[in-house]
Image 1 (cartoon, rainbow, N blue to C red):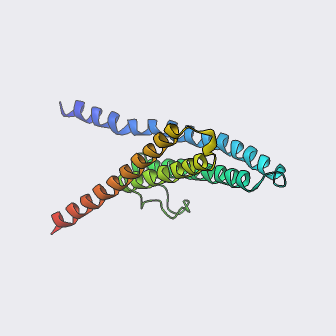
Image 2: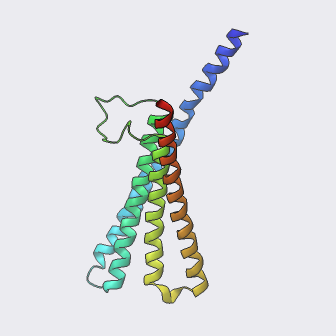
Image 3: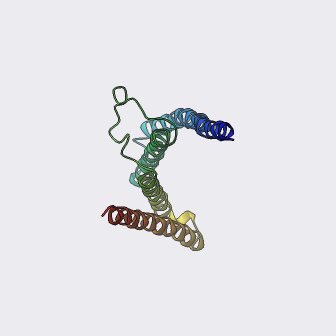
Length: 170
């Protein structure tokens, strides 16, 4: 019976390596997104003298949005691999946050990134408010506020968990 238990445990522990497929897929999607970013940047550069101020702000917000999304993907790939698959060799890895992001802090960073991305999208909507109905703007604002409340609640719960861990050590 003990040998069966050991086999099951090995299978379960080894299954974490299946996550590598997802992280490699994210890396490939990041490369595709980089091409998309390059195209957006090209469109901005060729129109730099034809865009009015509002159009240029919207174009810059689009580039900022893309950078935030790409950073989010990198953060999830690196910290997810580090937390769930295998530790990086510290002599080869030159990323300052490796080993510092646990699952709780990763959730907060992801939620913060989603709020930032949502803020940019909402700002783009406000700058183009003539293209949207009042009802649509209200729903987009409500969704953004839901993201903000969720991020604040995650932060609050993480602080509560840290306090619980600290008091249990005493």
